[in-house]
Each structure stands twice: as structure tokens, then as C-alpha cells.
Amino acid sequence: MHERTMEEAKVSSFLFMAMPSTGAPPATFRMRRQRLQAALEARKLGSLLVTYPVDIAYLTGFRGSAGLALFARSEAILWVDPRYTLQAHEDAHGVEIVETKRGLVEAAGKVLRKRSLGRLGFDDAHLNAQGYLSLRRVLGGKARLVAAGDLMPGLRMIKGGEEIATMRAAGRVTVEAFEETLGLVKPGMSECDLAAELDYRARRKGAEGMAFETIVASGARGAFPHARPSRKLLEECDLVVVDAGAIIAGYAADMTRTLYLGKPGNRVRKLYSAVLEAQSQGIQALRDGVQAGKVDSAARNVLDKNGLGRYFTHSTGHGVGMEVHEAPRLGKRSKSPVCLGCVVTIEPGIYLESFGGIRIEDTVLVGAGGPEILTPASKTHWFLA
Image (cartoon, rainbow, N blue to C red; front, side, top):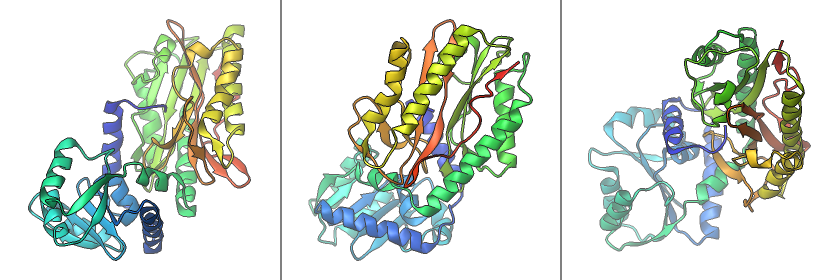
């Protein structure tokens, strides 16, 4: 699944909030907070105020939809409202839990005003204007607020061993559910029914949910990269784009396969082969330290050489983890390095109006031994004749 719209971002956040704790051991969260402290010291920040629920979950294990946390050298505090007090005590590790019936910012401000905070980092990427103004008001000049919205994405970008193992499991469930569903795909089946069958099988295999609304787009609708499943029936000679990802223990996978109902002619075969080669080149370009834009170029150049570049309308990929879209972004102008331990998608696609679309996507780990595909469903058995 490529770059998300605001609506899809909300769906992703909702699904995340519905997931239970990852169950990682306390030592994992302690290590993450140590990495955070090192990052704070490098930026000369005394502490960080975390308002984004995904980041709070990453640092503590608490996965409620509302909370506010402070992380400093000698303390970690999590403020929650009464709906989440019991859950926070059960899920959170290594933090002092404070229940408040007031607003979270107000409650935190009462504590923060008593401290000498100096430079206080905050998440400008997720704290809205109202929250920022409230924070400034309750602090009353006791701290200098410093935008640090890129700090947590940088920490979460590098996956640890437990995270990688969990994402392998998410990839495996995604592949198995997809492969079981293949036997049902035929003309006369609706896009909605195909999506529902895939989601059902993923759930039966242990998925806690899907990372986003499963995409099924057939025929001309395949030219819509963000198509939602409709009641349209699959037809003979349709290209069918299927994009799905299971969530296991709070971590997502993301995979797209394009199918063809019937025996494809030369044009369809050539288009599919070009996209498959573009994906292969993108995967091969993944290595520790490579600039993200170079991975995009490796895939994009193949489509350009085949005269298809203008039909590739999004970036080559994105990071995956606790959310289906994380750092790094693999786009034309992306200069950030792709590091060992990153998990990303490689998903070139072409979208031809009135004809359809072809996208091939895998979730891929940047490993010490080279790229490892975490969603290894077949890409050669793609037509259902």
C-alpha cells in the first residue's frame, strides 16, 4: 500500500488503537527509552513530551487511544484518564502512571511547572495547534518548547529482533490468507466478497486485524491506486489488484499482488514483466546505508526504459512497523539512508486509464545478509486461466 490519504491515516490509527499490547518484555521498553535518552542528549534536550499514542506504545507498551507521557533522564510519567487507568497499569512498563480527570495537558502542566525543564521537546508532527497553545499556556514560560517531531520516527525506523520476528509472522499470515483465497477468485465474484474472504482467513490464522482496508480493484478500477472494494463483479480478462496486510501483535505487513482472470495476451504480459522487473531492481538496491531515493530510482528507471514511467504515480515504498506507513519514505527526492534493521515496502505500479493497473509489493527487511522478503507469495503464478 503506497502513500496514504488523510482518511486512510485515520483508519490506520483506529486499527492500531484496537490492537492489544505487543506483550514485549520490560527489558525491551527499557532499551528503547535508553536509545531515546541518547537521542535527547545528542539534541541537547532535557526531556520529551510524547502525545502520539503509537510512540507512547513503543516506549511503554500502553496502547490506549489517549495519553500523554514525559520522558527525561531520571523519570518517565504517563498521564491517562480514568478509562485507561487499569489498562495502563497492566500494559505499561517502567513509567509512573498518573490518573487525571482533568485534561491531560492541564494535568501534565501542573507537574511540569514545578520542574526546571530547559529545552522540552514536543512532537510537532502530531500535536495540533490547540494542544500546542494549551501546552504553552500551562507551562507559563517554564520551558523552551523545541520541535522534535522527527525524533521518534527515527527511533522506530530500526527494528529490533522481537519486532522483526513479529513482522515475519505478520507476513506469513498475509501470504497464507492470500494463497488460500486464490482458489475462490473467479469471474462473477465481487471485489467486496474477495476482500472479505481474505480478511476472514487472515483473522482465522491469528491476525488481530488488517493494517488498512484491504484493496481489491478489478478491470478499469485497477487504475485507481487507492480504490476501495466495490460491488463490481470480477470479469473474464480482468486485471485484479489485491493489496492487504495482516497485523500480528501490533505489527503490520503489506503486500500487493496483481492477478489476471484468463490467459493474458502479449500486452498484459509485457506490462506485468516490466513491473516485476522494476520491483526486483528496487529490492536488489536495498542495502545498509543506501540513500532512499536511489532505491526509488532503481525501480523507476526500469519503468522509464519501458516507456511506462509516466504511469508510475507514487513513490516506490515506505517503512512498515507498528503502523503501515512509517519512516523511511522511498521517494524520488528522499535523501535519508535506509539502514540495517529497516523494514520497508517495495511497490512499483502502473495505472492506465480505462485499462487497469498492475502493482507488485512486498514487505522487505534490510538484513545483514541482504534484503529478506517477508511476504513471499508467488509472483510468477499470477494469471488464473
